[in-house]
Length: 85
Image (cartoon, rainbow, N blue to C red; front, side, top):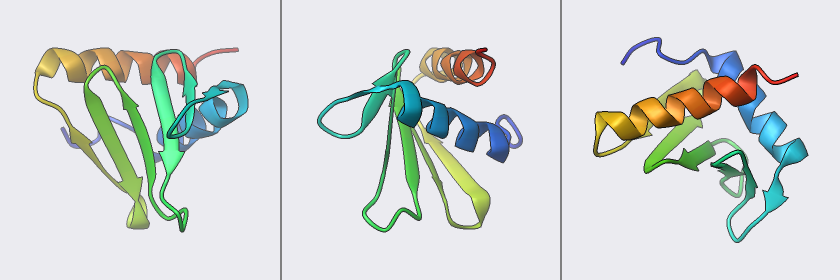
């Protein structure tokens, strides 16, 4: 799983969702992904397709998922959001 995602890409997707997304109960939702942060802002979360991505201190991230298909769908969504015009 190492190097599947670039740290700049994760932050770019988070910012794009914050700008273009619609507010829901936990954060902003856009193109099938919800973005939110913890209270202190040190950890951000991207959630969708049965996957939770946690990105935090020291630019480390962790993906929680049960099936590889969920991960693949989620990564495709992040790629599409990151490469929008």
